[in-house]
Image 1 (cartoon, rainbow, N blue to C red):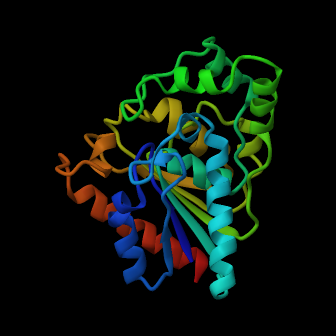
Image 2 (cartoon, helix red, strand yellow):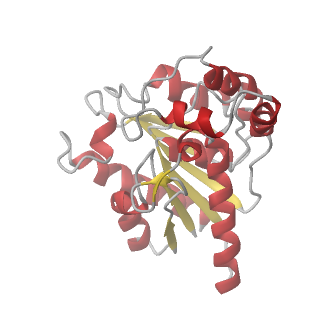
Length: 242
């Protein structure tokens, strides 16, 4: 069983390039639409900024699927924010203090193209008081799922928000791919923390000229990269789940 987690504002349908090679390899695959963060059902500010809730979507989906038939060993593949989601299910935790800084404006964050003004919309729903502080303090909780046995990250995000201490606790195999020309989730800020601090992590660049949108744009500059990375994900899960 492999669960596929899409990037910010995307959809499970965007991940066909990952789903196809996994199904062809014989895996049962579930590509999620994350609540409040997918273009099918619509956007909510929490879906973009309460990133720690995303892994819970996967665990709930696994609960439902397990009632239909045995899951067997589970893997999670994720792109961009989905890359963080996959790592969180293996033990990665975000730093509540950094998140609080984001909500209060002390820590600047790039504008979210899919949801301009997401931070302002969130502040209207959760004023800066003790209740919102408690929400963020709960963000650092453990979101790992013991059913997850392997993780494949593609251009992972939120690397600067996760704690090195939590990454050091990850014990399942983790494989990572990133674009050398990615300015949305750049290597130094987002990928390197996962690669350096997860003791089981390995990976390599998908190419020096590969951009973030080469993994989701309708007409990517390098259409072959998605096919190649999807095939590498299938090979990785065949090695660690079968």
